[in-house]
Length: 173
Image (tube, rainbow, N blue to C red; front, side, top):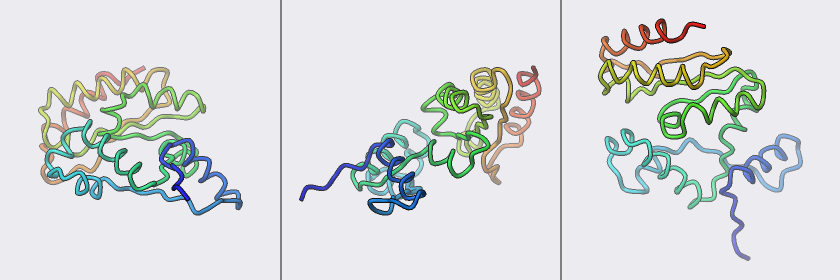
């Protein structure tokens, strides 16, 4: 019997909903698999985590290859129904408008995260630009918050100051 293709988000979400209602055809498989995907496609960590297109494409490729059900935003909405949240590198790749449209569709507030790798490696000017872009695209009409993901020991203090200053400058209504 040929294996069914459970890689689409829609099919994955349908399976998840059925499981939560107590009527699954099988247990849905959800995974946070970025490190596994990096290893499977044979790319070093620096290249994988600093190239949003590679991270997103590689993760989706591995999800499909292994038949993992990944309902992504719909699953997040089920787990945390009070808001929609996205963070880099996904937001960088898909754009904040993608998340904003989803939040508006379901009447939910939006939270966008500036990625840890970006904050640790970007210039203050690049941080300011990203924060401004996320606020202008995601923060329209309010019901919006911005967070700084995983501020690590290698995050330059100048970048933290730039992010906070940009929020204060561009994040007023």
